[in-house]
Image (cartoon, rainbow, N blue to C red; front, side, top):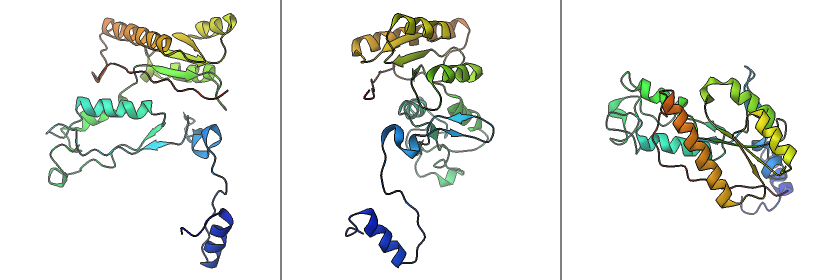
Length: 226
């Protein structure tokens, strides 16, 4: 395979072998990548992209086989990675004697409730770009607000639109804050900490403490050219 230096050589090789194997000759990246495109499920739910994380569940569960605080924090970090899908459960043991080690998650009657909480764990904050393909930030915010799972979670607009009328539009739409590009790290950190602190205080007032008490949010700025 190392001798196949270009797509044409690879195509000739698989044709010689009699293999029907369609492939893309150009590897696209960024917004043009096929995996970066949204996908709509048969029930109408829109998934923002097609990147998927497959957790390996063999080292941070409790001895009873339940997710620990570290498991919840890890799953939250999967969400922060940008991948919209988590293929959870594939590496969970189905029998006690089938565990690879004492800290692997186990599916059994006593752990089902705790495992379900992994699916229900929500982010501390949603950072939403306004100028996205297919579905812009305002339309995405409407969908987020229709889902009771995200009730009370602050949504912050991230955009190159920095005029006064742009900030007013995001405020009226219900965004918790407006961050303009290029991002200043100090300002970003201040806004995220303020919004997440307010959300936690509101949740406590409603008697709705977050499921996982993970480490404080450490914001990371990601910007796109243009």
